[in-house]
Image 1 (cartoon, helix red, strand yellow):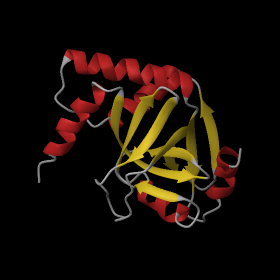
Image 2 (cartoon, helix red, strand yellow):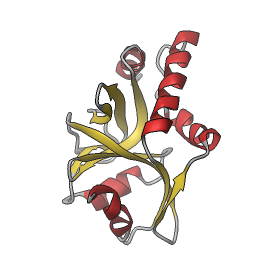
Image 3 (cartoon, one colour):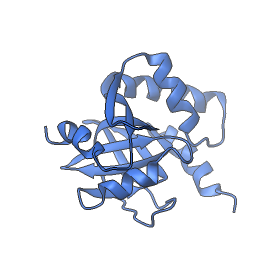
Image 4 (cartoon, one colour):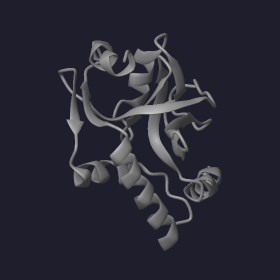
Length: 170
């Protein structure tokens, strides 16, 4: 079916300093994490590995929104493979771009052009207009200034949890 709810919500969010992303979200130790990637990047796989370690927000669509105290991630109902969804949210501790690999490691990204080239294709696009893009690009710039961004390489062993632990145990 045509996802008209997402198109309208994406527009609505941009007007309220929010963005809808093709991503998986989780809350670990009170901190929000967003795992971003295209279809088959491993978003659902990552959420399966995180089950029992925190709260799964959603494995396919999540919201980042700026609040007075900073950026938060919020779950949505628009799940993928896993039916686990939660309307909860938490302060956004990190954005992690997923890459299936034979190793488990996180690499801090600082190049804004590189981050934008990975982030923008995962934005759920609403009623696209010039003012909508202006709001999304301004928001993306603020996100990059305030939220750490990583490339997360992982295999299916579950050892990636050790790589993430330093981010959520702080």
